[in-house]
Length: 261
Image (cartoon, rainbow, N blue to C red; front, side, top):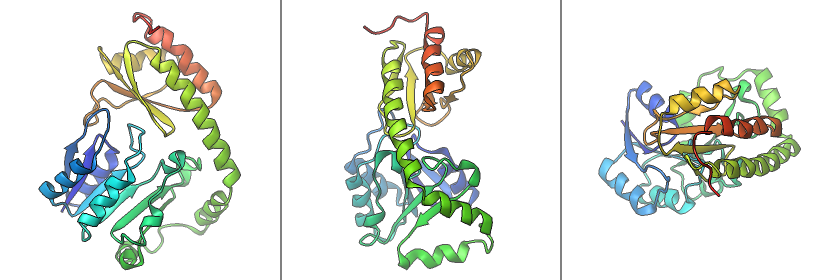
């Protein structure tokens, strides 16, 4: 069974497809990550996958896939499950959940690990049409979530005020970090609506840059081994103090390179 992925994208989709006994088929979109409707439909016609996955906003690029693209695929292939990974959708203020009623093959996954700041809870939500729900409940483990975990998750889900505060903070801090990265001539930074920024080295090795950040006490992620992410690193948006530290480290890490004016 083939799962169609549009690369670069979240690495666990390919890994889980293989673990389940299937095959991950990669359609390389590259950077900038601009997935158009004609490209998606062409890939579907060529690959004829049993499952297709869209991550929106995409990880690691941070940009949103146009809703029109996903719905066009769902409508053109009504017998193919279309998984939409919305782990970061709260940051963008977008969701395809309302479209499930008219597109029963669309399945939306969400998580408590991002804007709800409960990664350690390991809770996710799958939103499906009633026509498909039976397939998922049949495969669901009988004790997949403890009563304690569920109680905590419900409490967190009701705390919309904390979510709104985090969204506002991430938006302002992301712009500040983005502008700081844009000032560095040695890199190309990609716009993001999520709580991270992807940037690509114009030259040099990501391992060296990663090590120089570590010497400044800053940990970022080297994603250069992800498909389509050669010479790329990803920086998360943290607290203002953490972001200050990251911005301050840019001068030491990229000191030999001239800055944009």
